[in-house]
Amino acid sequence: MRIAVLGGEGVVGRHVVDEARRRGHEAISLSRSSGVDVSSGDGLDEALVGADVAIDVTNIASLRRHTALRYFESSSKHLQSAALRCAVGHVVVLSIVGIDQVRAVGYYDAKVTQERLHLDGPVPATVLRATQFHEFALQVASRATAAGVALVPSIRVQTVAARSVAEQLVDAAAAGPHRGRLADVAGPPPPGVLADRTRAAFERAGRRTKVVSVPPLGSAFEGVREGALLPAADATITGPSFEAWLDGPDGPATTDGSAAA
Image (cartoon, rainbow, N blue to C red):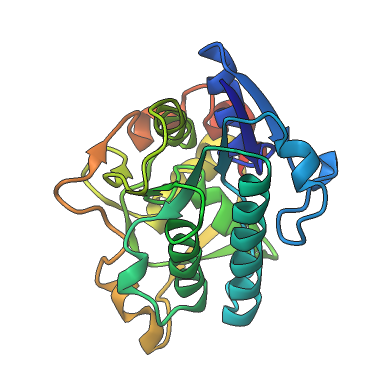
């Protein structure tokens, strides 16, 4: 099977490419650096020729509603149209657990729109929602660190390894076209506090950064504060645990956090 991975150089995308190839599939990594821009459609048709399935793990860093919505609307429409023209039979899309409960947050609302556009599109699409990655702790901290202090939202998370999510995405691709959502995927319980996981990740990485836990402010984040991003009881649970990941091959003890930057 020929699998096109949109965002193949990102935190989860590189694992998708590796896992697909490990299973004997032909996986091609598509990103702006390879001349493919899913948000504008540039290079998409050429890259998707001959692909059986496309896995979209692209993302945008901005949490602003207008910016995120513009990106996910355009990327979804371009990918669906290009996949139809190139006879790609299936699109697999990575999304986030609980986003329909926190649509007051612009970024999450934009992700709901992305899901809808794919599920209603001409090419059958499968949506896999995952909780935040174990790598998320360092990602958040790297964007909010100044003068040796990292401001981290005081929220509960049940994170999952990016590599484990990649395995689930390749499973979905190999299973064939399926229009709809799969069971959500999350890491092993119990949930933890994001600030605590960030401190542990910094410690393993040997980084002397003070972590300050701050509540996410505003009514828009009420659902987040109440645990909307935690998995439901019927979610698929997959390891490793956060504690095992810390000292594993993908953890900060090995990567020094570079994979999460």
